[in-house]
Length: 383
Image (tube, rainbow, N blue to C red):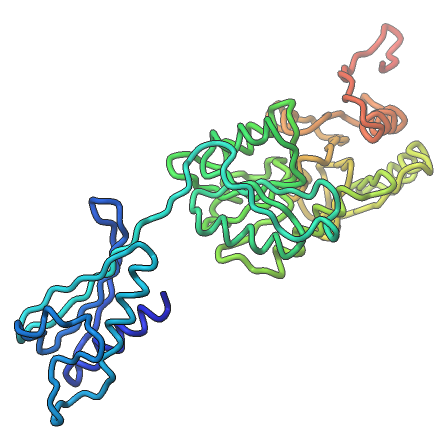
């Protein structure tokens, strides 16, 4: 294809006057072909030569005084290549107006249904077991490019071109992560994020890859939707590798990891003692410190205070993946909308650090989170 375009463009430039213009256009034809057209504003092809345009060693001006050099093989070679692709080449020409060559090639489109094009990356000898990513992207070319990049990291891919395919594949297969374009034709990728958050199915971490990253982050407004990273298009390969490593660290943590975000030293100390030595506990005393830690690694559980000295704790939910359980433990009253976004929302005046530690142990042990109800007995004791 490079050779085809080189031949057509060089031919158009050759026969264009000084200061002339050569244009290229691509469009779909009604009969299912993609047409690439290269137009010049040259003298046009003489009527008597048109039947021999694609012949070997043919030139419109065969005299020794012709203005343009050449072998007369360019268009013949172009025709042979195009026909090997099951295509065809033609032209329109007007004397004194110019010539346009058309290359028609059959368009190959994958069917837009579930189970679409599993893409294999890397060799099984070098790939950890079960490393497969679901690429949700309505641009098939972009999806294939992304699969090739992931393949270089030893990861297999399935492609879903629309929302229905994505949901069907998620119901059928298990994935280490999802890459998600926010705009999927008539659908919105946000719908898939909401579905993942509210369902009992697997909730893999999500890498958003979109041309509308900033707009989407504002739209989500801090929802705990499990996003590992936000990547602009075209994809930065270094950022993609970093996101993959974040996902892998999530899968291979040996000891359950807890991030406790709290500015009260006494609460931090009591919670650490209550959690014990069987978990790894990291601390963040400010909003900015918590955000840095969430960027650097993925935790199994985050215990979150809302009242931080440099920010509102709920805004950190945008940086926490869906596979991380979030427990809000704060002196502030928790609103209903916020409570729906987290595993548990509890107030310090009604629950103890020891009770929170028990909830954390249930989560890290892989059991379902028990229903938590705050109620007081007649003696005032919280149960």
